[in-house]
Image 1 (cartoon, rainbow, N blue to C red):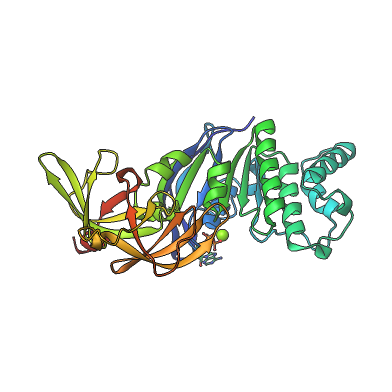
Image 2 (cartoon, helix red, strand yellow):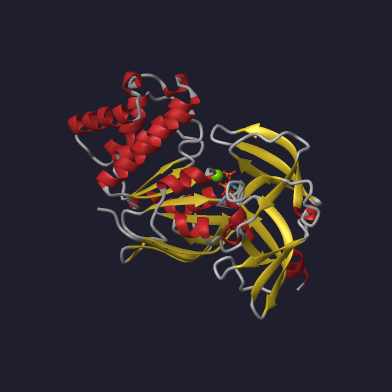
Length: 361
Ligand SMILES: Nc1ncnc2c1ncn2[C@@H]1O[C@H](COP(=O)(O)OP(=O)(O)OP(=O)(O)O)[C@@H](O)[C@H]1O
Ligand SMILES: [Mg+2]
């Protein structure tokens, strides 16, 4: 059974450069955590610190009740799948996986049985005696995953383990990791760039930005209530408008600059601010309708279709709204240059104090 992990006020980096700043979070036994963030924000560094390859400058790592901050990697019951795979090039698939099992003093029969089982799971049975240098990128990635899974660690650290797999293999390996995790009960932290992958696999998502935790929580809480514009954008609310929140006796309203239009706000849609705001929304949470040309009053609230792309279930439209361009999905294609009307339901809007105001404050 795996153990809980408590990370407190972790600071780490390379030489004099600090990469991770004041990182604190905890993970319950058996939880699956997705670590999301832009390139260079410190995801790999964080996994390396957890695995013991980088010594933190300050802060602590506690597993159950034991402080493991000073323990060398081999004394932590963890396994890591490296972003670069880090396979031993002079060894075969079998030897790569067997190496750590021998170190753990497992018997020959048990090693063979584990390897054959795990290679079956990642679809590499026929490659067991192939040298890893004679494998494709995706196959190497699966060997790296198999090698980590074979030691049955209590904490599995996965650094973008699926990035080199094609969509179909990716879906099945994703499913296998989840199924194995349920069956063996290990705790996992997986780095991914893919918001959908994080949502579908994780019990908890941690969003890292510039070496700091921007927000941590369930997929639902991050998707529905992103705490910052950065999280909103990362969780798919890519459209941005600017506006002003106005409090009135009979409720709160939002004036949107690009639409030159006022929409009423509900409690849930963020009437906690007043004044200049930035507004984020997802392309599939607002709707389009054709503009009625006789409707002069709403003229400013309309947009112009710039481009249309087929997305399978719907068409994605680039829409010119005042001085901004937004992306909005619609079930049927609307011709370029058409005038359209958009309706923004208040519950689809994620509202934050305007970045321009925050910076000057
Ligand atoms: N060995 C190193 N020495 C010095 N700086 C490093 C080293 N490795 C990484 N860095 C720097 O630390 C920062 C964080 O790097 P890290 O590899 O953790 O990012 P990441 O979030 O994993 O990015 P990616 O998504 O591109 O893999 C970057 O600015 C990077 O340049
Ligand atoms: Mg990385």
